[in-house]
Image (cartoon, rainbow, N blue to C red; front, side, top):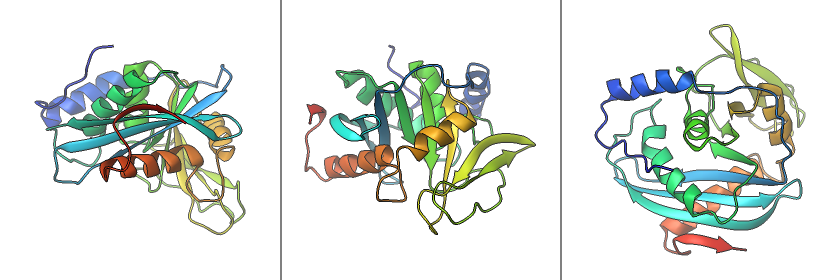
Amino acid sequence: MATLNYDTLTVTAATQIQNEMRNETIIQARDFPVNIIAGADISFNKFSTTVYAGIILLQFPQLIPIGYSLVKKEVLFPYVPGYLAFREVPALLAAWENLQQRPDLLVVDGHGIAHPRRMGIAAHFGVVANTPTVGCAKKVLCGKYEEPPSEKGSNTPLVFKNEVVGAALRTKNAVKPVFVSPGYRMDVPGTVEIISQCVGRYRIPEPTRLAHNIVNRFRLGEVPEGFTLM
């Protein structure tokens, strides 16, 4: 797989890339089994050029971690809301390339098609890596939704420009919902179903919660770069 380099792109050029990649996005019902699921996250200072990327592998549905890949990369594309994939995907792709085993599905901390141009980081990564992805974000980037009932597992559609692009999903009783959306080779119902099965003791589903934890430990120098079996 070719190394991605977005360092010299303008925002105008990035917009054109998103619009072109949107035509390559495949949104469909899941047609594959999930035995290994992965979580992906990034850690960086908003004004730093250093990006720390991590992907953690988990057995599914047990959600037992079995390995992780960590990469540090310098990026020059600026921090611009709606275009974070151009900072984050190259580093995540490098972490992906280091995996000794590929997951059946990747959960990305961010949005899939619940994005103004339908190309959030999960959709972007899914297209370039040609792998099934879903996005799970803490906040809405675009669209409107009705507050789901307070019970765990409740969900309501996230609608943008008269299209259902995701869902607000209550992962714990009486806590704020997370916002899930398909990225590549998944659809909204399948995304809700799979993320609902990834919830442990916390609001954030285990794949992205554990990815967040390991990548922050990496940034602090507590774990080494590269691929590690657990």
